[in-house]
Amino acid sequence: MRVLVLGGTGTLGRQIAKQALDAGHTVRCMVRAPRKASFLQEWGCELTRGNLLDPDSLAYALEDQEAVIDAATARATDSESVYRIDWDGKLNLYNQCHAKGVRRIVFTSLLEAERFRSVPLMDIKHCTERLLEESDLDYTILQGAAFMQGVISQFSIPILESQTVWVSGSPTRIAYMNTQDMARFAVAAVDRPETIRCSYPVVGPKAWNTGEVIQLCELASSKSARVFRVPGSLLNLMQGICSFFEPAVNVAERLAFAEVTGGGGSLDAPMEASYRAFGLDPSETTQLETYIREYYDTILKRLRDMEADLDKDAKKKLPF
Image (cartoon, rainbow, N blue to C red; front, side, top):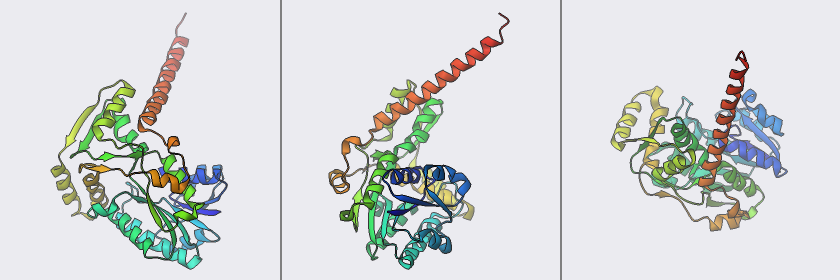
């Protein structure tokens, strides 16, 4: 099929684009900065410049497309509110889909978004799901939890570099998933008509709290973590202060997510029905233990190689 991928330069979107190409689809990616997306073009994607807040660029990107896989969301570096970027952008997208006759939509959402309506991103995901359910579009909704790639920046790198790991509140158990595995579901949905107008949880094999993730990192890196726990009340105070100032709205919205990750409970769901519906093998899904171990094995090998190269250079300078 001819598939438009939104969010193609993101951690998940690039995996979706790659796997869609591998599956034989013709892939177009709408990107804000084509120069930064040249790797997508090298893989075989067609690029078009645009963003969700520009209806004309959306109309152009949707021309002659048969399906949309939507992995786009606001970035931490964006200055505007997530409501402006994600909500207004989704309204523009679905209006243009109707205008162009593109009915097949695969939307990447968040698990249990309806429970956390006070968190802006979760609120928008929930409202977008309702919007799709009330439309006549042929949607499939994938409800994820969190990605293993985020574990690297939050835990693995700070532990490796002997930096402080910051955690908050009562740790929520989270079923982390590799973006490559999430992309398999997104691409499979395009060819699975039985998933139309349905929502599915798409989460990892096991839910972990922050203490368990830190232990995995310590074991794989042979280093001890320095952990600092931030009281939830302090985060709430910071969020309240930031919300008073327009330039800090994005920061306040990000701080609000601590209610999800530090509120206790569990972000997990049974996956048997999801694997059946998409025709995928659960044994091929990445385990968090394996992901962390392979990350450290790769990084530590590179560090050893760099150290060996430095030793060779130093020896060349010796007079004997």
